[in-house]
Length: 145
Image (cartoon, rainbow, N blue to C red; front, side, top):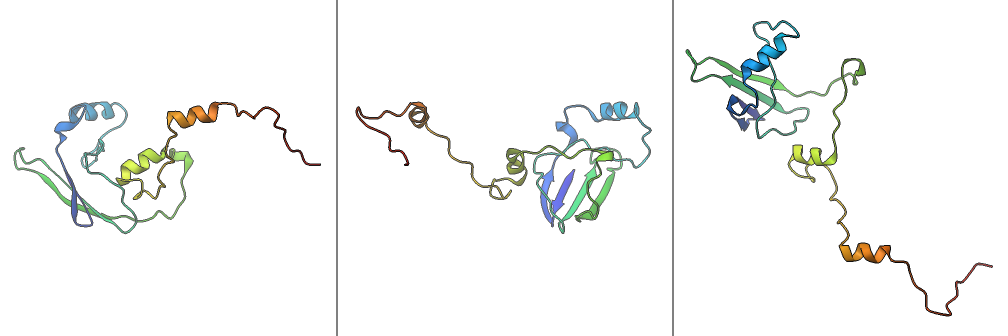
């Protein structure tokens, strides 16, 4: 499988890294519905995936170079567009995504449009905040009259 985004090759991998063999995917899915010739089973994505935005051109090619006849899909091309309709909760649910996942998908926090996280307090600073404040003997608190 190879994927290009805006002409740049971003993925080039085989099915060898799948956790489950492709035959098991087909068998499991076939228990729930009928697979027809030309159906596509999405099994996940190899390394190199990233975020695409409206206007990006994505091309994907699948092949089996060691199979008889070396079949190939050819390059399948699509241009990413923004959907016209809102999300329909009747047909699914939105993904739960946090800032760590956004940064991972985009490659960096900055590319994801996220601010740098606040630095963690040192152990000494945490201890200082936790101690009660002491006043010198004889000190008084000023009060508003």
